[in-house]
Image (cartoon, rainbow, N blue to C red; front, side):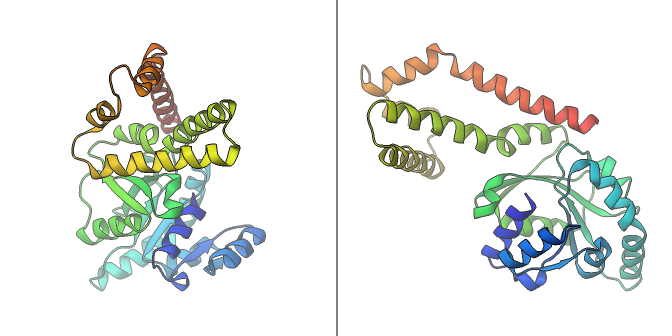
Amino acid sequence: MASAIIRGLVKHGHKSEHILVCAPSQHTRSRLVKEFNVRVHSDNSAAVAFADIIILAVKPFIVPLVCDELRPLLGQLNEQRGDQGGEQKLVISIAAGLTHASISDKLPRNTQLVCAMPNLPTAIGKGLTGLYVPGHLDRQAFDDAEQLMRAVGDTVWLEDENQMASIVATAGSSPAYFFLFLEAMEKAAIAQGLPPKTASKAVLQSAMGAVSMAMASKEGLANLRHQVTSPKGTTEQAVLAFQHGDLDALVARAMDSAARRAKELALG
């Protein structure tokens, strides 16, 4: 996900020299320089000193270790900024399954912290990121978090942290659902006799067209579906097959499973 965000930021106008990536592996640092021409470092403290916005893009179990490492310097720098009337540094965590409180407890008191859940299409600037912060967030920090994540797609602010599990199920995991469904359509088209390239093009272009129509329309998904489902026509037969297979219930079970797992991760 870190690479996806870097790719999206660079692609959408953020200067690579303004991005400093810390990674313990020399191989990873070399790859990032080659791919994105960003600045790299092995010391996390270098990022804290360099950046106004710090993104924690590590595995959840590593977050406490990183926060313990950064806490003294981050506290010192924020205190200096406060004395000078400047804005506090903003920390954005994209670690799945960690609550705001569990991260905040590891950082200096009053740290501006936003929990974010981006999805994979951030890599092409088409992502969706769920954002959450309890209570007050400085206007500048709010705007910075919004602007940063809008560089790689759209954003939604959540009113309750419990909604983060639903965002995981609805947006974070959903690209895999769509890929799975498109893959099944492609296999069926090939089985019906279409050449693989033709099947792939037909499926992907149709999916893109349907999504574009849905986003441009004010009629709602159900109305759009009814428009293309003529009585006793071919589409109706396909829709009936899906309904007989209880597609709604299957999707609900899948999304409930994803949300439940997200909550389990949050509990540790």
